[in-house]
Image (cartoon, rainbow, N blue to C red; front, side, top):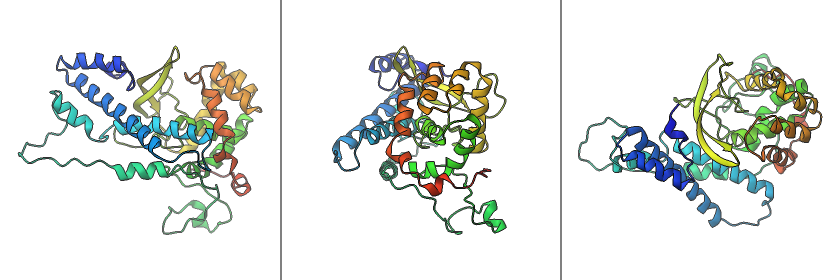
Length: 331
């Protein structure tokens, strides 16, 4: 694990100054971490400015929408600082005296620097609420499922999605899996979707490995010594004594979203500390409270956030058609 990644958070100016001191030792790792921390902080400020510049108090504004925006902004600022990011990291590394990541020869030509602004704006716009319905995708635009191949078009079969475009797509695609897992736990699918939405920012921040492959880990279960499967190491926010800290952690990776739901059920069932939560599964609010008490997450407001999402506009717009859409999820 990279100890420098645990030195501070991207909002901790004192920690950033500490990293700057380490960077003066000309350690390439320290210099790159300083640059990456700055890029994450810059991204957060940029998104905040975009929110402040937009119209507010509209018909669609609510406490829930502000919560979703805050979740999304926090997650996307972390994601955009990983990998290639916006490009500031490599530029700052060179300015601070570190070696650039690229090994291309210096031809003397000025480099072109482009920001993927359009992509970011489109992602933010995708958060606008829309009614949740079961769509009938065209054959040309969607992968063919087992149901379509056999001619059984009456049952809605979910399609494995690598990147979710908006919360509505997130709910529609995962609902059948949530129904199956909820039945095993004796709870409602809404609470599982809400928890997965909180953990992944409605699917926008699902952990990915170094090659960019999705881990399909919807509940951010970490890969400890008990895990023998694949994993993905990423930046995450943990709360220590009420303070949000940015850390590196290894998370489990799955072949499909159904595996993520199944492992979530097995994970809770195999841990005695979650016994009280399972006993309260028929009461979603108490269930999430007991999960928090048992230490599922370090966020002191974890249960409250899940319950606000569960009772919010997005999940409140789930149609009867989707609620009754087949139980045979297999991807």
